[in-house]
Length: 162
Image (tube, helix red, strand yellow):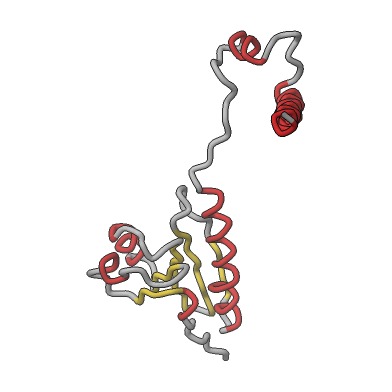
């Protein structure tokens, strides 16, 4: 009996907290039940936030790009321009320059990226690197003529100082 009483109290607390959050987001219920409120505004249920992982991939990709790619390039004497991740946050590119020498490097979110993406990046990049460990790398990278490997194992070329 006591356990069911505690469970009911917990449900009430959770329900009130949800209602409080709901009222902050959507305003007052105007004396309506939650279901009536959403029906009045043309919804069957409250809209739920969705996340397909893009924001998390963007954050992880950007952080690793700055720490594992940009920093070593700058330490090697290159000026670096970082480009935004693609729409799905599967890759991002970095352009390095020193004097009249320039090259680009791509950083993939994962080794397990389709071969078409590798081939597309190969056209403009001197190296295609990825986060994490190799996972069946040869099956994803067949036919490529540029360096492919984990970003942690790659050393950028030294820029020549005059």
